[in-house]
Image (cartoon, rainbow, N blue to C red; front, side, top):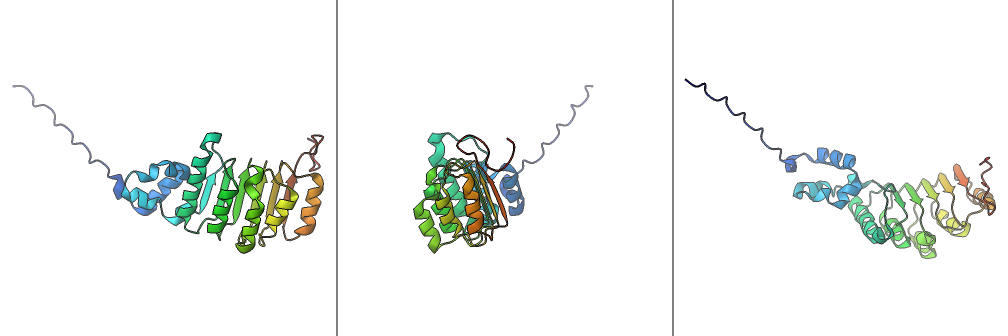
Length: 215
């Protein structure tokens, strides 16, 4: 008599990812990265979309460490605006590279009264326009504590107009910014003694570093 075939093991029930609790989904999104959420990961199902819109998830928006082609700048600006909208006024920190312009900066300033940290890298001269400075007279960044500018095209005059609207600023980093010169460090120190930590590094016209180092 032939032996009976072994029983076929039952397949484990499939996981319904839409039933994950909100706090667990939020943790998954943080590990995944908010840029990936904006790209579509948050639209898998309705519960994921709801979780992707929780303002606490968007308190820190880091869009700096991505290689972005010039033709995609508008797409990334739209993503940044979507992140600001989802923060619902709770945005605390923002970092962006290249694609940030004056119009996006205005959008952030108008909607982020609790912003404490702003980091901009390799942005054009228009990122801090006089129009933005005018807006900041009406809506100053009262909570901004740290401003980091690297390879940003800006003059000391424009930077001064911005810093006047950041009364709580304690940390300022200006590194390799086109339009900034060695003597500008003393100007900033004299005008803004409330800034506790000022890091100023640039290159003079002869290519030498103006921060006093040997490089």
